[in-house]
Length: 449
Image 1 (cartoon, rainbow, N blue to C red):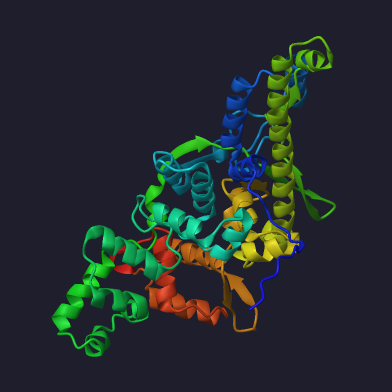
Image 2: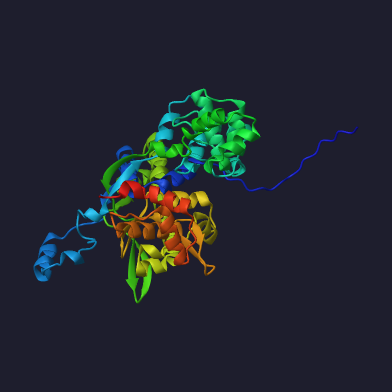
């Protein structure tokens, strides 16, 4: 056996999780309100950075304009006014989300710097239900880490509350919860891993036969599974009403819809000239210069990341209005099916970038203020071989129930048949699911005598 020493050069591309990249991802994920708070924090801690609101009001011109244009306004014509300070259409329910909750918990763990960065990256890659949908190989490659480091960090996240977060599938989510609650056993795990579809259709006899269980014991086991939360991330949402401003505004120009960024009340950032002069001065203290350079890098990094955020949001918004042209002309019933994966493909970026880019972002349209996420929905087939979105179907169901005879409310089965007559194939259980998501009671509970 021969052993030879040799040198070999290889070329490869790797993404290193730098502080700058981490801040860029974090800023992209922020809402407009959160970004303002981040800018305020940076201004307080960084003497090189100056910030001021971009909107300056010329009160004399403003009053003259009011006097010149005062006229009777029909209440039915009231719409968004870009110059007002309070627009009640912009009051929405804001939820403190899963990301804030988990990041707060993981900050209490004693972790090495690398482990903390990996944990934070994984948390920010979770979806709103608390699942890790991103392939682990992508995270390992993106952060240039070993699989063992990834698994250790994911295990830490799966210990956080609410129980079940960080799971990569529904089965794993439920098994984590069973372990945490101390109700785990082998048969329960087998049922969860292989027979959730049978539970969904209440096929208790088939399950009891498969596992050689008495029917009552099978019912008891399934009742335990049904107490678990399939969407643990939603438990983190604490709703409160806040005032939001749209990140982008849709305008109609020559029968075409165009997107423009809403820069009203944005902070204008600039570098303080006083510190620039200190850097130019050759006689200045070297330690002071080093501090200023560090703060200057931080300030310019923040400004670049804010511009990058603005550019990404605009690009995503442009793709949304391309897909939703019919909605912009006719209303909510005409929303088309759209997936984040489709936009990621168009913009040649990762799906997680799109997820961060739509999180907490709002668009002002001719039909009001909408969160970006509203435009993403799954596709359902129609009889003419086309597709329609789940969002538009929910709107149809909502309007159908709104116009029903309250003494004879429509059943889910009837609504399903009506939709099929209109060429939309929706099963009764799907109608029931959408009705529940809309917060509408069943027909028996809606009946008024």
